[in-house]
Length: 110
Image (tube, rainbow, N blue to C red; front, side, top):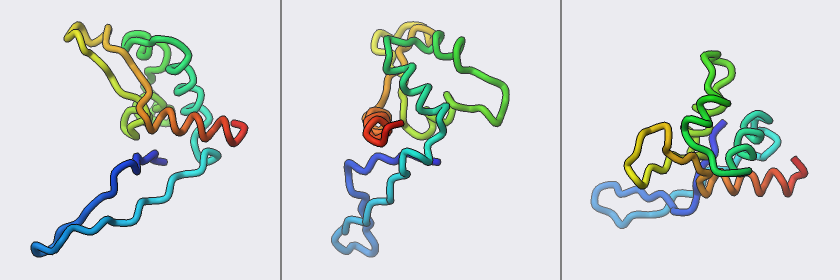
């Protein structure tokens, strides 16, 4: 399960030819998204969250429940550390892909 950002077309350049846009990959329907992932994204959206908050609430050693890690790897959330402070104070925010997924889920009644 992967959420992709299709805001820029991908290009290929073979042998010096003019780059051409490749067709965008299909987006996953929101019903294919894990309910726990949607819950996590709503939790992040609800109020300001730090990395420390997120680890306290969502970190797990169970390989079958990797909501935080999956959301980060899929580009649904990001860490913002503008002030260069400690990692625990870094802010966890939704990416444009994360916001789009939540909006689509709401439109689908999820």
